[in-house]
Length: 518
Image (cartoon, rainbow, N blue to C red; front, top):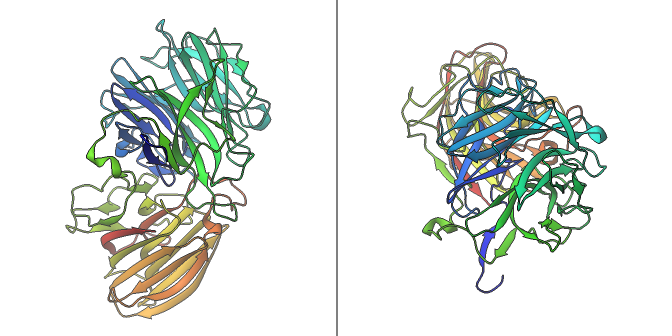
């Protein structure tokens, strides 16, 4: 690290936080990410220095804003864009397989946010641009693979009504999946920036510029951000958004993936930060295969006050959630909109109560599930479950979930009036129970331990002596290991309950949830 420099760590949002978008309001910065089938949707974070972020809520936290009950995994909320204009925050996004493209507004980024305002055109990844002359443009991705491109049209920002017909303005660099378009106006020129190549080894960020918001845009001949040609611990870089701080320094937030040696990551796509420099020809540069985006960064300065909390990474959770508060702490998420009455912090004070629904972890539906994103490759999660008067077929436990086709769980269930602790592994859509132990207990401690190669699933009846009941490979829970449907999410570790085909009669009560990293 350089002398007289400030150091920070990447990723700034570890774990499954893809497709970041960033906005500045005065000396404050706010950032959002894709959330797909998880609810509340679109987590929003606050920072004063860009390197240390704290979650302040979710943009979409009401059923009237978003209904994900029938969404398959990796559908739902894609690539939101956050913008701030004249005292109002705007978030525009796509509800895939749902209502399509819409935006919501708020005066306070922590909420409440408005109900959706629909916009008529575009496929996915819509973005908003407020021009100096008062015009407001929507830029969105349309088409697929090598035919994907960006369209643009003007809207009435009060109603979402289109004021012009959509025009194709950008076809990228000839590669597939021209996505995540953002329009900026910088020093009198309009810049059109998108990802290209798809989120894999060829992912890159490209840019063009024009004197007109509709182009034609001169394409810069090289990516402004990529690691596609070098060996590096961070890969798949792209899908970026730009912001300028009060010092006049430019920054980019973007996604990347920390692959393990054999080329996969259960953490999914994470959010990284890097400074932007401008070359002599007036183009922004981030990292074109130079290896300057690293896990440990050194920069001349960061914006904002150098507070005592600078060393803390508020977006990273480690420790114990004891469920003593009136609400779940920030960082918790449900699988789709939870069914009414399916969870409670009030039924038994200091415990999270889940009422199993008919849907289970392999089903598309309202599953009684609450979890946190896995943020480290090597980590450990544990809980204490009390599960008393239950019926046959009902179960509850601790789960490592990628989607309905890939998840591991250790659970307590009842069969023929007898209690069993079991481990189920679901890989590529096929489920199998690999071990079961009969127990005479209503209280069971569960633990999942992750290494680079495996998840270990353990239980204990006293919290001291642990029994290893099953193991599953990490690769099978990675987004790279899909068969029929691409996966865009990382692993979420959750507490769950299910009636396995019918509403459960018993209540699953969890005393705490503890995370230990490293």
